[in-house]
Image (tube, rainbow, N blue to C red):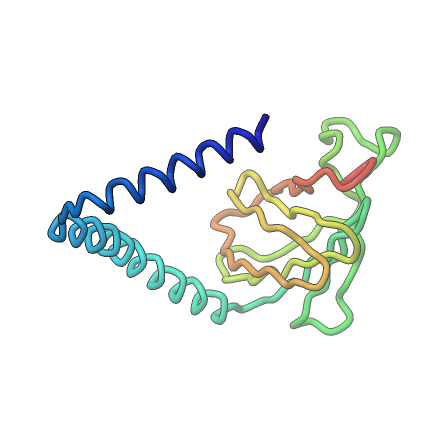
Length: 175
């Protein structure tokens, strides 16, 4: 099925290429436009993309607080690099541990508390499988992979409780 279709298409392309080359049709100006125009489009897209990438890299360097977030199956570990000895694990509360009004599958036993109105750099990695650390209400989502350190800088504009979650199905009871 697929092999015969690919073979027929490949044969057709070879035949048509030799057939039209033998006619000696010259469209040099058209070929030049078809080469230069896409190149100019790519360059026009590349310049703003590289400038934003450079700006984003500089923004990560200017942070007042660094929090290393490590994803594990069924919990997250938080380590404040600027405050020695401040590290803890955050497990999702089971249904029987929830108090009235606490959301199921979002509430944890140890919350990560950070100040507002300062630039905080989050360094996200994984200790085992692929995770995805997310704060949906702040539009933050970063993949956490073992051996790779993903970073994002953010300044929380208001005081509040923002529920994070793993947006990757990493096993039963993923947090």
